[in-house]
Image 1 (cartoon, helix red, strand yellow):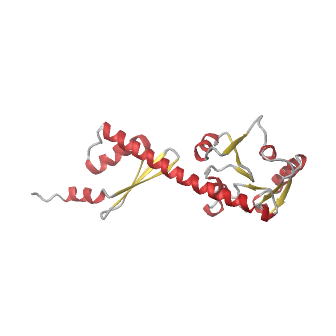
Image 2 (image 1 turned 180 degrees about the vertical axis):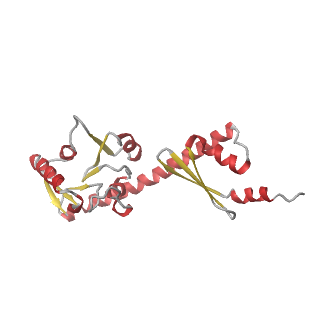
Length: 220
């Protein structure tokens, strides 16, 4: 038959599809023995866009629906795996609270320099909870955990955290972060926190609020 280099290249490209989610965009990376393609399209157009580039024709509607269901299943699997890791980390932290001489742990979203953009290695809230929003404070006690964030992230928090977590919202006419932390704790709690991640003004507010509720803030 007639040698068709373009057809062979398309076949070589269709090897592996890895889907990663980022806000409202989905990225498809097609890796094969040929050149590497990186494609960014809205979720609803992802399957059709990939097919148009590789085969010069969109997927049939039924096939696109099946592919979309496959993507949803993959995302659910990834999310479940991430939540399993978070549960393990929280359990380890809860086990080590007593050894640190505290009854709970406060985890801030800031780094030691109060940077606007926090490096991956300093994203402690994301590590311990799985929540990737830019504003959030985590309270971990021996019997549970809570995330305090503002109204921009409550829906995102509900999607990224499992049912064991409680989500507290701050904002106008709502309790402050310090009040939410106090209300999330039982009596006579010593709360540990990495002092390098807390501005002086925030430390004073937290300390005053927690002391008024019978708690104490412990620098770690």
